[in-house]
Amino acid sequence: MAQRPERADALRNRETVLAAADALFAASSSSHSVSMDDIATAAGVGKGTLFRRFGDRTGLIGAVIASRLEPLQQAVREAQDTAGSSPRQRVLDLLDVSLRFKIENRNLMAAAEEAGLSSPYQAEHYGWWHGMLHAALDQVPGVHDADFTAHALLATIRADLVAHLIDDQEMTPDGLRSSLAAYVDNVLGSHATSPGTRKEA
Image (cartoon, rainbow, N blue to C red; front, side, top):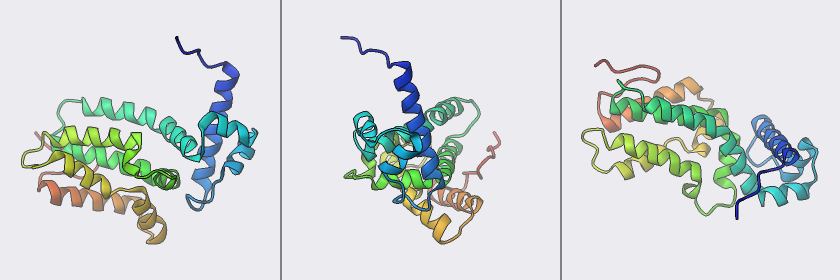
């Protein structure tokens, strides 16, 4: 049986809830400080509506992340298909895009990593980033195990680490991006380039 299209009012309510949750996480001081009560109040809906619609806080956080990542993932796919980019540069570009997203959404992403999942690696968005990075690493000469290397590189930009470096150690976003680029250079060799640059053919 075909699934019924979502009613217009239900779709509007969903978008209102996602926008309210997104704004609260962006403005919060930590990933723990945003509750379902806070989100319901900000969205102007009952708390029961949130649980009926998203299941629990984990489901709601996942929906917010998916709504934020959808346009970014489309842009990443298009950029990865662009000719002229070396495999090493594609690896760095993928990590840099993911890092910038986590810097801008670090409370939201940290909440996702802490939201009752047995492992952050089970999150759908993690699988997507790992798959894209794995495919790029497969084309980099000298990479012995692209699957493991993709996991290891993604571990350097876990949301809790990003939040610690930015919020606790007061590292600047540009400084963190530069440190990531240097680390990728060490892992893959001397041909990786800085964020925003392209290797000459």
